[in-house]
Length: 222
Length: 222
Image (cartoon, rainbow over all chains, first blue to last red):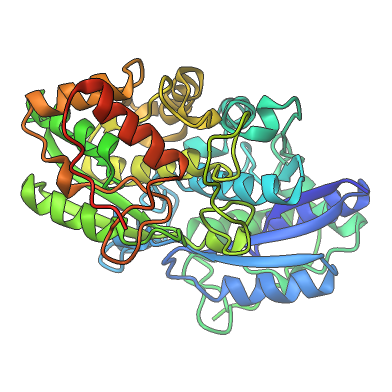
């Protein structure tokens, strides 16, 4: 079996990406990050999901990037907006997916895994630059230049099975695969139990996705 | 003054890169990483150098990548070789420069800095893939796709002032700029005081550089 690493935030998208990786026959390893995010309860969700899906190993990696600030998700002095805003919102975390994918790449090389799954989506999303196909393509190219494995002829693939799907389509795909979305949390301001605020970008995109998919929203709200 | 971030390990190359960035008129910020490396004493050197050079801020960022293992520098069960070996040696840390540059990129974006200096060298080096110009070029391209600043028209530059220099030329350049190499540590097995083993790759490349440059080696050996 080929090994794959799945970036697992504990949210709707990353769990669906995990379910897809398993369906595709990969032996799955999950990685999550404790990066100073205000919605740290997502890590407990990621841990439970990892057990539920019997991943071979789940690593929660500490990243001291909270001290950089500059984002509503890592800087308590910046408020999470309660409505969608034009442009790239203040919830954007500088270079986050570059950092997360780099860490996943390091672990992948140690495991001799050459497949990394990330649940980015460029349809119903917040406009983050590091969710776009051109970013993923550039990272994949980098991965193959950056590593001993790449130099020695292995080829790393960054899988983005959700990138062209609407949120409703992601949910429909997940439901087909038996994903229990009540066990996921997407909210940027989730409380310690993971209950969602209902008004941030992530909550609005998620709720609209369930509505359009014709699926009852299983989210626990505050 | 334009701001620049310098990746500062406390070794010979990164200090020279810092001295060059200052000479070029940048307002300098330094970043170092506590990544589970066995030669952790380099962090104290980086801190002292940051003070000596009056950098605006020096961040020491924790990265929980030690748990990945797979390198003699982060895994105590893998011995640091006492001689140069053909190919990419076991001191290679998977994806290290990708991870370090990604973190620097995140901080750079928060600071509104668009220049990052890294003291990589592709002449007298250990053959690490992430020290080569093609890797740096791919990372720069990625940086401009990955970030809000890049999307909004800013351009990130990854500066590699040492990439084409021999170790002796790096030392000569540093001496011209007044660098005190007694305040740097390059050894992979440096003890707590920073005294060097004299036999690892990093020690051999450094000692040969001083010899060829005709400069007395100021290194403190164990």
